[in-house]
Image (cartoon, rainbow over all chains, first blue to last red; front, side, top):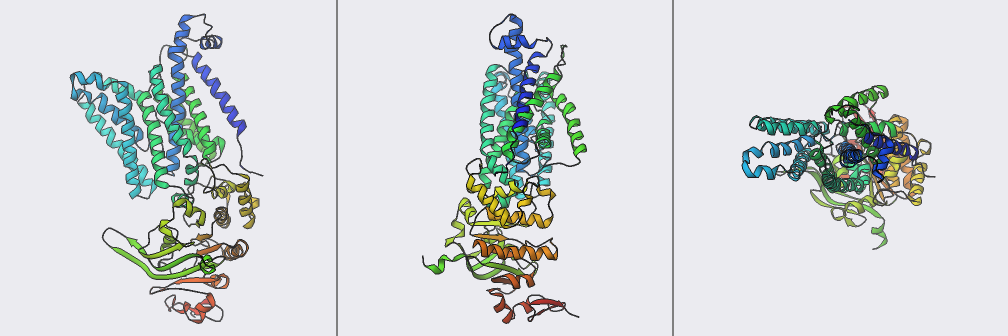
Length: 342
Length: 264
């Protein structure tokens, strides 16, 4: 008589909602395309060539990006919250996103310093991806190095915020010495965007993302024992150092590539794990991890659909939408429940 | 291996405990010797700050030894890897849980981690061990409750059940009776005694409940400023060990009743 609760109905519901959101996302935009034609263009029986180009080359990669970004940020937030045993942890609060921003800033803004021919080589998509992943990895390593000396988890969060401030300062110094064009390029990157990815970019993105997800899935058991605290986890046979390194590697790979391809997207990483815990009411990562995946993807698709402002030619920065829509939802949920489940 | 050594689960030889920094060693206690036998209940007592927690932390390999050796089932503690250690020694600490959102069953099930596969799936055997552990400490009725809904006494029993589910030769508990009322203090220690008898496990606990420990333990480790003594409670009383445990200005040990009295 196993008492492990299963959540099949919730998972089924989330999956249906995800598929629904996916197709709604495909149909909405400056040109509204009926669902029937979407299926038509996806499965090859075309009747309208323009629509097919819009769907295949623009909206489909964007929707897939949204799914990867939402699920990836949610999962990296979950990993950080368990690793640091702090409900406030997330890629942003710990300075991981700022680290990625710093890497990108060095490439975009700092390329002026190298000048001439190098510039075009440096601002390829690859260099931005590498710089951003490297930036997030280095900041996370620094946070971990400090956290092994400081036992108080609150102090670690403050240190993460300080790293964030330092990178922000370096970015502003860099931007002071950059040309207007470079600055504009960096600021647009900072707005966050899901729509700049070609199919080829998406393949690279998906590859790195998958490695991160596999590492996360491999750590599920370790994550569960970390819920008891470091000493208990160790007494259960967990190799703390190795486990910590894998979690950091997974987070920086996921959060780093997302920030590289889609810009620093706020809120999702912190909020999705909390929203998921409110619905699933469990701390078991075997359930939380897939739930966060589905939930993050759904929220990101909804945010992207709103950012398009259906029927108009405008596209709002995705970064603004995630915070505008999401933050009040989190506040409302927490006020209603009066208690943070962690 | 002869029968004598087979029954000894945990053994300390000329053990020195304390803290090491780059510059100096800070010795908390030294010349510690004891042999904990299978199926025994052992109490560790001593004044505040005397080094009870340091000793326990050293015994569970959280902290390195300064000198001397600790043998667990005949093997040097330092040489046992984390996973093998997890199958031989389980712990109940005073530190609070990181997450209290787990159900009692989930928490006790975590004790099976050293035995489960890479993702932590529970087999039929695991489920039996977990249910048995819940039964042994009488908390089967609580298994769907969440840890934040429990009282301190219930939570302590849950943590004990988790250690039992880990199915180790020895369980080490750091002050399992703090924050509990008088009844639950006696209840927990009596439960520990029952468990040693029923499961044949060795249980070592530190406590400030000296009178209860004297009544229930098979043997005791008494830590004093100058030395650490290991013996059966009745021998400890007759040799007058408890009289000098605390400064004599406030309380005195009454060897007839085996308890401390406040000086009138």
